[in-house]
Image 1 (cartoon, helix red, strand yellow):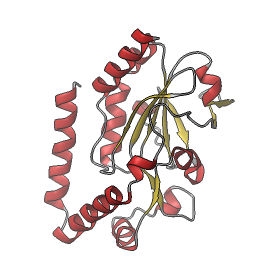
Image 2 (cartoon, helix red, strand yellow; image 1 turned 90 degrees about the vertical axis):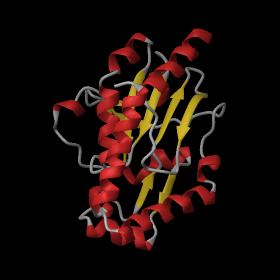
Image 3 (cartoon, helix red, strand yellow; image 1 turned 180 degrees about the vertical axis):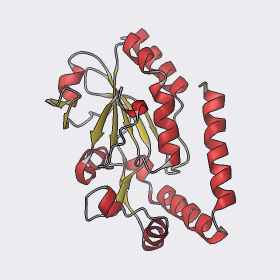
Length: 217
């Protein structure tokens, strides 16, 4: 899936969602995005040139690992997503699934990080490392976590998405959709963060960024 087709796919999901949702619900989501832009979270979060914080996780072999231990072998792509319940997140993950072999050729590992504790068993989610971010600790260390407002909480509850249950956490918090490329020196080489949950970095753009980085290394 190229850049244009990926973007078009996300736009189509957004169009269908807007058509299906009542106008007041669409207004709540738009105001929430506007509030996030206004608060400056995108500018305050971890930026290019800054040192990425280390974090631990259980790898595919059910062993303890960490970001810094991965960086000893090559750069790392860290992709924060809201949860498997989100259509935009699933579309993004499925698109990245198709280019994992290109990441490997470029010597990079890929981590998909989410507070969502309920990982599906579908085949498309088995071939990459999924990291469960308990209490959004990893996302918080990157500065991309925000708390949902009351109207958002009511909206999610109406949809049957109770984040305190889905994330097994008392706080109703989510990470902004974000993609980071971390070099072996632990510095952020590339970053994509957007306050709008409907916007995502296309796999093609990330591969271009990774290719540019490898050519300079």
